[in-house]
Image (cartoon, rainbow, N blue to C red; front, side):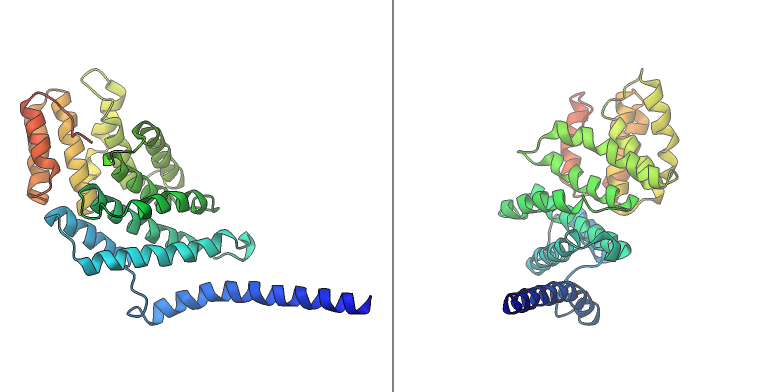
Length: 280
Protein backbone atom coordinates (compact mmCIF):
# COMPACT_ATOMS: atom_id res chain seq x y z
CA UNK A 1 0.00 0.00 0.00
CA UNK A 2 2.81 2.39 0.90
CA UNK A 3 4.66 1.54 -2.32
CA UNK A 4 1.52 2.18 -4.38
CA UNK A 5 0.89 5.51 -2.63
CA UNK A 6 4.49 6.53 -3.19
CA UNK A 7 4.30 5.68 -6.90
CA UNK A 8 1.00 7.56 -7.27
CA UNK A 9 2.41 10.62 -5.55
CA UNK A 10 5.55 10.43 -7.72
CA UNK A 11 3.47 10.23 -10.93
CA UNK A 12 1.41 13.23 -9.84
CA UNK A 13 4.56 15.18 -9.05
CA UNK A 14 6.07 14.39 -12.45
CA UNK A 15 2.83 15.32 -14.21
CA UNK A 16 2.71 18.59 -12.31
CA UNK A 17 6.30 19.39 -13.24
CA UNK A 18 5.60 18.66 -16.93
CA UNK A 19 2.54 20.95 -16.93
CA UNK A 20 4.53 23.67 -15.19
CA UNK A 21 7.33 23.32 -17.75
CA UNK A 22 4.76 23.56 -20.55
CA UNK A 23 3.43 26.84 -19.19
CA UNK A 24 6.94 28.17 -18.67
CA UNK A 25 7.86 27.36 -22.26
CA UNK A 26 5.25 29.82 -23.53
CA UNK A 27 6.56 32.65 -21.38
CA UNK A 28 10.19 31.84 -22.17
CA UNK A 29 9.32 31.80 -25.89
CA UNK A 30 7.63 35.19 -25.58
CA UNK A 31 10.64 36.57 -23.68
CA UNK A 32 13.01 35.03 -26.22
CA UNK A 33 11.20 36.79 -29.02
CA UNK A 34 11.16 40.09 -27.13
CA UNK A 35 14.92 39.89 -26.42
CA UNK A 36 16.02 38.23 -29.68
CA UNK A 37 13.66 39.25 -32.50
CA UNK A 38 16.25 38.11 -35.07
CA UNK A 39 16.18 34.58 -33.68
CA UNK A 40 12.42 34.16 -33.95
CA UNK A 41 11.30 36.16 -36.96
CA UNK A 42 7.82 37.61 -36.62
CA UNK A 43 6.28 40.86 -37.84
CA UNK A 44 4.84 43.32 -35.32
CA UNK A 45 1.57 45.19 -35.94
CA UNK A 46 3.22 48.20 -37.59
CA UNK A 47 5.21 45.91 -39.88
CA UNK A 48 2.06 43.99 -40.80
CA UNK A 49 0.34 47.25 -41.69
CA UNK A 50 3.28 48.33 -43.85
CA UNK A 51 3.53 44.93 -45.53
CA UNK A 52 -0.17 44.79 -46.40
CA UNK A 53 -0.16 48.37 -47.66
CA UNK A 54 2.91 47.61 -49.78
CA UNK A 55 1.23 44.57 -51.29
CA UNK A 56 -1.90 46.60 -52.12
CA UNK A 57 0.36 49.11 -53.87
CA UNK A 58 2.61 46.77 -55.85
CA UNK A 59 0.98 43.33 -55.89
CA UNK A 60 4.40 41.91 -55.02
CA UNK A 61 5.99 40.39 -51.92
CA UNK A 62 9.48 39.07 -51.28
CA UNK A 63 10.01 35.35 -50.70
CA UNK A 64 11.74 36.22 -47.42
CA UNK A 65 8.65 38.11 -46.24
CA UNK A 66 6.43 35.15 -47.15
CA UNK A 67 8.74 32.89 -45.15
CA UNK A 68 8.56 35.25 -42.17
CA UNK A 69 4.76 35.41 -42.42
CA UNK A 70 4.36 31.63 -42.39
CA UNK A 71 6.91 31.11 -39.61
CA UNK A 72 5.33 33.93 -37.62
CA UNK A 73 1.75 32.69 -37.87
CA UNK A 74 2.86 29.19 -36.85
CA UNK A 75 4.74 30.56 -33.84
CA UNK A 76 1.71 32.65 -32.83
CA UNK A 77 -0.61 29.65 -33.28
CA UNK A 78 1.56 27.56 -30.94
CA UNK A 79 1.56 30.36 -28.36
CA UNK A 80 -2.23 30.77 -28.54
CA UNK A 81 -2.79 27.03 -28.28
CA UNK A 82 -1.04 27.08 -24.92
CA UNK A 83 -3.37 29.85 -23.76
CA UNK A 84 -6.47 27.94 -24.86
CA UNK A 85 -5.66 25.17 -22.39
CA UNK A 86 -4.52 27.48 -19.64
CA UNK A 87 -6.82 28.26 -16.71
CA UNK A 88 -8.56 31.61 -17.21
CA UNK A 89 -7.60 32.87 -13.75
CA UNK A 90 -3.89 32.49 -14.48
CA UNK A 91 -4.12 33.71 -18.08
CA UNK A 92 -2.72 37.11 -19.03
CA UNK A 93 -5.74 38.55 -20.85
CA UNK A 94 -3.81 41.52 -22.21
CA UNK A 95 -1.15 39.23 -23.68
CA UNK A 96 -3.87 36.92 -25.01
CA UNK A 97 -5.54 39.69 -26.99
CA UNK A 98 -2.21 41.07 -28.19
CA UNK A 99 -1.22 37.65 -29.56
CA UNK A 100 -4.62 37.08 -31.14
CA UNK A 101 -4.63 40.47 -32.88
CA UNK A 102 -1.14 39.85 -34.24
CA UNK A 103 -2.14 36.35 -35.37
CA UNK A 104 -5.16 37.75 -37.24
CA UNK A 105 -3.02 40.47 -38.86
CA UNK A 106 -0.70 37.76 -40.21
CA UNK A 107 -3.72 35.73 -41.35
CA UNK A 108 -5.20 38.73 -43.19
CA UNK A 109 -1.99 39.33 -45.13
CA UNK A 110 -1.58 35.66 -46.05
CA UNK A 111 -5.21 35.42 -47.18
CA UNK A 112 -4.91 38.63 -49.23
CA UNK A 113 -1.79 37.39 -51.02
CA UNK A 114 -3.44 34.01 -51.52
CA UNK A 115 -6.37 35.77 -53.24
CA UNK A 116 -4.12 37.16 -55.95
CA UNK A 117 -2.21 33.90 -56.42
CA UNK A 118 0.90 35.10 -54.66
CA UNK A 119 0.59 32.14 -52.27
CA UNK A 120 -1.78 29.83 -54.13
CA UNK A 121 0.21 26.83 -52.88
CA UNK A 122 -0.79 27.57 -49.29
CA UNK A 123 -4.19 25.84 -49.23
CA UNK A 124 -3.24 23.83 -46.16
CA UNK A 125 -2.12 26.92 -44.26
CA UNK A 126 -5.45 28.64 -44.99
CA UNK A 127 -7.37 25.55 -43.85
CA UNK A 128 -5.25 25.29 -40.70
CA UNK A 129 -5.87 28.97 -39.92
CA UNK A 130 -9.64 28.50 -40.19
CA UNK A 131 -9.47 25.45 -37.91
CA UNK A 132 -7.20 27.17 -35.37
CA UNK A 133 -9.45 30.23 -35.19
CA UNK A 134 -12.37 28.10 -34.05
CA UNK A 135 -10.35 27.35 -30.90
CA UNK A 136 -8.73 30.73 -30.43
CA UNK A 137 -11.99 32.70 -30.66
CA UNK A 138 -13.45 30.71 -27.75
CA UNK A 139 -11.03 32.56 -25.45
CA UNK A 140 -12.79 34.88 -23.01
CA UNK A 141 -12.59 38.66 -22.62
CA UNK A 142 -11.86 39.40 -26.28
CA UNK A 143 -11.21 43.05 -27.11
CA UNK A 144 -13.18 44.91 -29.76
CA UNK A 145 -10.04 45.03 -31.90
CA UNK A 146 -10.03 41.22 -32.05
CA UNK A 147 -13.51 41.22 -33.58
CA UNK A 148 -12.45 43.84 -36.13
CA UNK A 149 -9.32 41.90 -37.12
CA UNK A 150 -11.32 38.71 -37.47
CA UNK A 151 -13.79 40.56 -39.70
CA UNK A 152 -10.86 41.80 -41.80
CA UNK A 153 -9.66 38.23 -42.25
CA UNK A 154 -13.14 37.02 -43.22
CA UNK A 155 -13.52 39.91 -45.67
CA UNK A 156 -10.45 38.73 -47.59
CA UNK A 157 -12.03 35.29 -47.90
CA UNK A 158 -14.97 36.66 -49.88
CA UNK A 159 -12.71 36.45 -52.92
CA UNK A 160 -11.81 32.81 -52.39
CA UNK A 161 -13.51 30.52 -54.89
CA UNK A 162 -14.48 27.92 -52.27
CA UNK A 163 -15.75 30.37 -49.67
CA UNK A 164 -19.28 30.16 -48.29
CA UNK A 165 -19.97 33.84 -48.89
CA UNK A 166 -23.48 33.75 -47.43
CA UNK A 167 -22.14 32.69 -44.02
CA UNK A 168 -19.45 35.36 -44.06
CA UNK A 169 -21.92 38.08 -45.07
CA UNK A 170 -24.07 37.11 -42.08
CA UNK A 171 -21.09 37.07 -39.71
CA UNK A 172 -19.46 40.39 -40.64
CA UNK A 173 -22.13 42.76 -39.20
CA UNK A 174 -22.21 40.71 -35.99
CA UNK A 175 -18.47 41.21 -35.56
CA UNK A 176 -18.69 44.95 -36.27
CA UNK A 177 -21.48 45.32 -33.72
CA UNK A 178 -19.51 43.34 -31.14
CA UNK A 179 -16.63 45.74 -31.64
CA UNK A 180 -19.03 48.67 -31.24
CA UNK A 181 -20.45 47.11 -28.08
CA UNK A 182 -16.95 47.43 -26.61
CA UNK A 183 -16.55 50.98 -27.93
CA UNK A 184 -19.58 52.63 -29.54
CA UNK A 185 -17.36 55.42 -30.95
CA UNK A 186 -14.95 53.11 -32.75
CA UNK A 187 -14.62 54.92 -36.09
CA UNK A 188 -13.16 51.95 -37.93
CA UNK A 189 -16.02 49.69 -36.86
CA UNK A 190 -18.60 52.34 -37.79
CA UNK A 191 -17.19 52.78 -41.31
CA UNK A 192 -16.84 49.04 -41.90
CA UNK A 193 -20.42 48.40 -40.78
CA UNK A 194 -21.54 51.05 -43.27
CA UNK A 195 -19.41 49.43 -45.99
CA UNK A 196 -21.18 46.14 -45.32
CA UNK A 197 -24.58 47.87 -45.53
CA UNK A 198 -23.70 49.26 -48.97
CA UNK A 199 -24.26 45.80 -50.44
CA UNK A 200 -27.98 46.11 -49.64
CA UNK A 201 -28.35 49.86 -50.13
CA UNK A 202 -29.93 51.64 -53.08
CA UNK A 203 -31.77 54.92 -53.71
CA UNK A 204 -34.79 53.91 -51.56
CA UNK A 205 -33.07 52.39 -48.49
CA UNK A 206 -33.26 55.57 -46.43
CA UNK A 207 -32.20 53.98 -43.12
CA UNK A 208 -29.08 52.42 -44.60
CA UNK A 209 -28.29 55.55 -46.60
CA UNK A 210 -28.41 57.88 -43.61
CA UNK A 211 -26.14 55.56 -41.63
CA UNK A 212 -23.70 55.26 -44.54
CA UNK A 213 -23.54 59.02 -44.97
CA UNK A 214 -23.18 59.62 -41.22
CA UNK A 215 -19.95 57.58 -41.02
CA UNK A 216 -18.47 58.92 -44.27
CA UNK A 217 -16.56 61.62 -42.37
CA UNK A 218 -14.49 58.96 -40.56
CA UNK A 219 -12.98 57.43 -43.72
CA UNK A 220 -9.93 59.68 -43.64
CA UNK A 221 -9.04 58.48 -40.12
CA UNK A 222 -8.45 54.91 -41.36
CA UNK A 223 -5.17 53.27 -42.34
CA UNK A 224 -4.29 53.11 -46.04
CA UNK A 225 -5.74 49.66 -46.74
CA UNK A 226 -8.99 50.30 -44.88
CA UNK A 227 -9.24 53.71 -46.53
CA UNK A 228 -8.81 52.16 -49.99
CA UNK A 229 -11.52 49.56 -49.31
CA UNK A 230 -13.84 52.26 -47.96
CA UNK A 231 -13.24 54.45 -51.03
CA UNK A 232 -14.21 51.50 -53.25
CA UNK A 233 -17.34 50.68 -51.27
CA UNK A 234 -18.47 54.33 -51.10
CA UNK A 235 -17.82 54.68 -54.82
CA UNK A 236 -20.19 51.78 -55.39
CA UNK A 237 -22.73 53.30 -52.99
CA UNK A 238 -22.90 56.62 -54.80
CA UNK A 239 -23.11 54.93 -58.18
CA UNK A 240 -26.04 52.85 -56.88
CA UNK A 241 -27.95 55.95 -55.77
CA UNK A 242 -27.15 57.65 -59.12
CA UNK A 243 -24.78 60.28 -57.72
CA UNK A 244 -22.21 59.29 -60.35
CA UNK A 245 -20.04 62.39 -59.84
CA UNK A 246 -19.34 61.41 -56.24
CA UNK A 247 -19.05 57.77 -57.25
CA UNK A 248 -16.21 58.63 -59.66
CA UNK A 249 -14.63 60.91 -57.06
CA UNK A 250 -14.27 57.99 -54.64
CA UNK A 251 -13.09 55.72 -57.46
CA UNK A 252 -10.23 58.10 -58.28
CA UNK A 253 -9.40 58.55 -54.60
CA UNK A 254 -8.88 54.79 -54.47
CA UNK A 255 -6.88 54.88 -57.72
CA UNK A 256 -4.63 57.66 -56.40
CA UNK A 257 -3.93 55.61 -53.29
CA UNK A 258 -3.10 52.29 -54.98
CA UNK A 259 -3.02 52.86 -58.77
CA UNK A 260 -1.99 49.30 -59.64
CA UNK A 261 -4.51 47.44 -57.50
CA UNK A 262 -6.16 44.70 -59.65
CA UNK A 263 -9.65 45.52 -58.36
CA UNK A 264 -9.67 48.93 -60.07
CA UNK A 265 -9.81 47.87 -63.76
CA UNK A 266 -12.53 45.34 -62.91
CA UNK A 267 -14.59 48.02 -61.18
CA UNK A 268 -13.97 50.50 -64.01
CA UNK A 269 -15.23 47.95 -66.52
CA UNK A 270 -18.30 47.19 -64.40
CA UNK A 271 -19.21 50.87 -64.17
CA UNK A 272 -19.09 51.29 -67.94
CA UNK A 273 -21.38 48.28 -68.27
CA UNK A 274 -23.82 49.80 -65.77
CA UNK A 275 -22.97 47.21 -63.09
CA UNK A 276 -22.46 48.86 -59.74
CA UNK A 277 -20.51 46.24 -57.81
CA UNK A 278 -16.90 45.39 -57.17
CA UNK A 279 -17.10 41.73 -58.04
CA UNK A 280 -16.22 40.93 -54.43
